[in-house]
Each structure stands twice: as structure tokens, then as C-alpha cells.
View 1: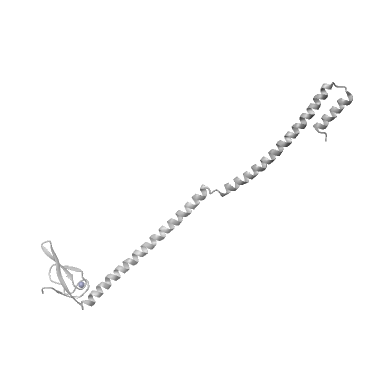
View 2: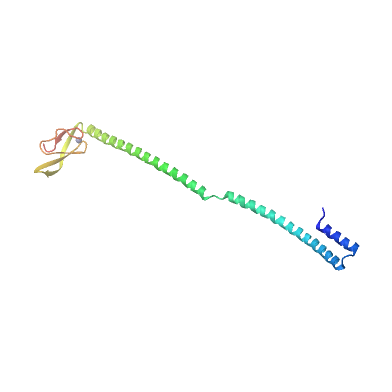
Length: 178
Ligand SMILES: [Zn+2]
């Protein structure tokens, strides 16, 4: 293929051999040839620089790509937060159920202790107790007497008559002072 420089060479050769054109044109052509030669050398150098720059940019680009891949996004954080909230809600629900279950068993245990206390009181009283008046108050022109059982420690009330047995623990009672 005929290049621009080949063309110039041919033109110069033509001018040299024919001498049909003024000498000025030959000088101009020679100058042009020199100019293009230098320009090509410059462009080659520039291209070399550009190639190096492209390589540098590619390396930088890869680094940035890796960095972007390693960045934790807002979506990731949001997903983590939602997961934690769900776990927390489940734990709270579980805690509620456990608390309810615990309260139920504490109730049973308290009832059991109360019953044991009563049975112990009856056992130690040999089935008898003293019903001692600890308080009294008036209601509608009548006096209410408050008695405390020596066996179970609980109180009962009466207006007229007397208790033969503690209404709480069932021990056979006798009223102090009788
Ligand atoms: Zn009693």
C-alpha cells in the first residue's frame, strides 16, 4: 500500500528527475517530509504514553471494582436490622409465655405452701385450737367479734353464739375465758 511518505518520496523523486516544477516546491516537499517524520515519532511516543496510562487506569478500575464489591450497602444493613428485630420479637413473645407459665406454677406453689401450713398447724394442735378474740367492731347496732385461731393463725368473725370448730382449719375450738 502506498503511504503518505511513499507518495512524498515519489513526488520528490519526480521533481528531481523532471525539474518541471520550481525548486521551491522540492524544498517544501522535503520540509513536509521532515515534519511528518517528526510528527509520526511524536505520535508514536504519545501512543506509548496513552497505552501506559490505559494500563494504569485498568489497574485502578479493578481496584475500585473490588472496593465497591466489599462495601456493605444500606440494603445489607437494613436486612440485618430487620433480622435482629424479628429475632427480638420472637424472644419477647417466648419470654411472655415463659413468664405466664412461671406465674402459674408460682401460684400452685403458694397454694401448696398454704395447705402445708394448715396441715402442720392441725398436726401440732392435736386437733384443738384456742379461738381468741383479737378485735371487735360495730355494724348496724351489732358487735362483730374477730377471733384468731391458735392452730392456723387465721381469723374468723361472729356476731351471736360461738364457733365449736375453726372455720379455716377445722380444729376443735374453745374460746379463751370460757
Ligand atoms: Zn384454725
